Image 1 (cartoon, rainbow, N blue to C red):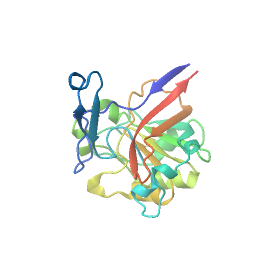
Image 2 (tube, one colour):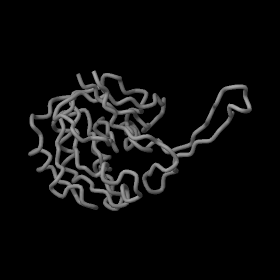
Image 3 (tube, rainbow, N blue to C red):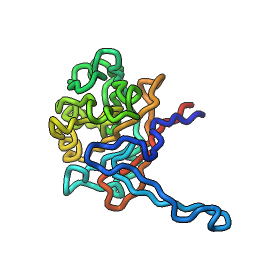
Image 4 (cartoon, rainbow, N blue to C red):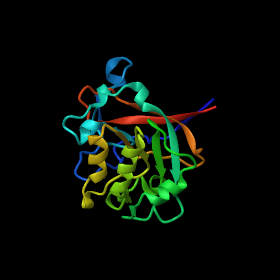
Length: 216
């Protein structure tokens, strides 16, 4: 049994969406001052690094993180690998057609749809990750809802701030979850179970998450 981590380490150099506060970590107690223990604090946007968006993120009546059942966050996953056809070019609008063509089996109710563009592995540590990212045509989020999928996992921001946030609104208002900024994706199978483990924030509209799969 092997664990495959799809989340990125977070530190003060981790890029965040424009306008949101960067991650900061500082010391409260240091080893040399306390006879042997260390304690830090952190400040950050909830949307730093690999993270989960709860429905509450774009729906004031939607569920926050703490109201999501664990079984909703550990789901069978179908991966659409659309790398190699230009969909990871900067500021490219990704339509539904190549995603449907790349799926090796249909999305079933409560699956995750995992769209693999190649963008994160190209530049996730660079400011261009957010400023020049590809983004999805609204028909992609509509497909997630109509297919009965539990949510969308992807290695790129699903919306571009310059073109509004239609995918966020559609998914959140229909009680779907969003997992953005997964990485380390080479060699993934087309079907697997994804574990999404966010901090259990009582009123969290999002949370950093450890995202992984278990390979037998």
